[in-house]
Length: 429
Image (tube, rainbow, N blue to C red):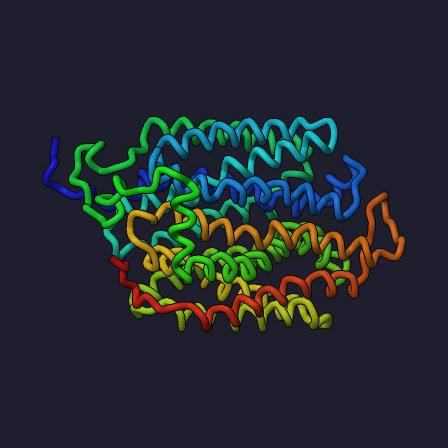
């Protein structure tokens, strides 16, 4: 036993990486319906509103689980949390893949969302326990990068697979992979370095875990006494809501119908947005750490993101290259949301880190949870009766009206940022 040495970064990244694979699978499931819209609407004979609800069932349970997840991360530890999450996610994915009716598909999505809800908060806990504090925002950004890689696999690669296999077959394989990842987490991940023979880093949260609130309500009430917490519940939801409502559901049909792109090309376009988002996260996190400030960089990213969404939704005559450029810029700037987690963690006492991460992540996912079905509802409201191959077609005006809901929330997020209190990258005592 070597109790006098800190864990090497390669070991820390390996432990963290197994949890990150689970997060990757969760992100894959999150956006997979985007390239299956026609298949799902045809198979279950559903409207845009019902499809929006099918996708959003993932977010209903995901959001509901965030606060208990934060408490469990502080009390159970990430190893048990991530292993159990993987097991339930695999079961939910099997249910979705084999669903004979829409109600079973909804239940499968509900189980998937509730179980993968533990992934990001569990990863944040692993980050705090296995990496020095100066890495926290950067590692959080790399976590987002991993997740978005999962979303990218749910774009063009998934669309191409579905040219040869049914959507049910592909989802079934993803269920089996989720079970394998869960086994890897149980056998190789440990909550603290000393469990693998290294010296614990003595990060503030590691040494303060014994102070973690035993009551979920007690912890939530305490974190909400800090204004930055509830601001961070609303702010990232607008920016993430835009990204995941567009790339996670409605972007592909919008791009195929009104920009004349093929489904694989439209999927590639939404993947472009997600890749840029993945790259932007670590860079915003790293630069924020180096600058020693959270607020100004967040404001800049939000402003650029809003301008980008305005161009994507309302500039109708744009070349493919121009569209790619705007999607890249919009996705990259949206990566500024990763600052939310370090910002919120520094705004509360260290022993509440898991709880505040859960509360903030709940706010993050409230965006797509509300916006995906809301945009579908607007599309159905403005539907003019056009149908091709049994699938409803929606007008440009319908999409622009629906997507305006996203932009309104993003603008609100930008305005609320002015009311946050800068932490200067320092943990409050």
